[in-house]
Image (cartoon, rainbow, N blue to C red; front, side, top):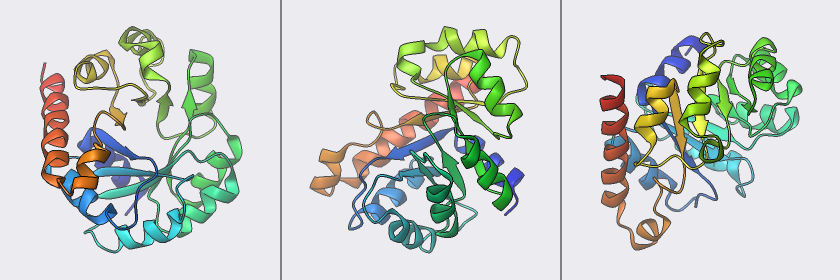
Length: 216
């Protein structure tokens, strides 16, 4: 698919599920549970052992029209290239690395570097970022997002770090096009129990909250 189509799929999901330290034995079931709850953008993290093999497995197990997979915590171009060749359709960083942005643009991969201040946001966007990840969201709060969107309304923002059911609507209302959610969405105890329905239920709650905020 084209980069614009991938961007649209991420925004349609509204939530990017962040799976840190995912287990190869359960990743398929977790991804299926998330999809059933309406969360169709899934981010593995580059510091997960065997992430490239895991990525190949999940991308080969799902219809590309239904679920989009990416990799986060990417800090250098070498890692960005490895995960892109393994099938990552988007790449996310906690900080801005120009070589990562350049590599992703070379390969036509959606890239979302991290930023905090307005200067960092516009620097990342001018360097070629498709979406700018404002991180950490819990420290900055929804007011920070709306303040950035005032002068920089043209920049798509994804908030990550501390997003929960209690505040996800506030971040969307403040101007975030997408939110990245980890621990508030992924219940690792439920995964260990094999209770994937619990993952689906929480995913549906986040999907509903995003939809409700967007309709306000």
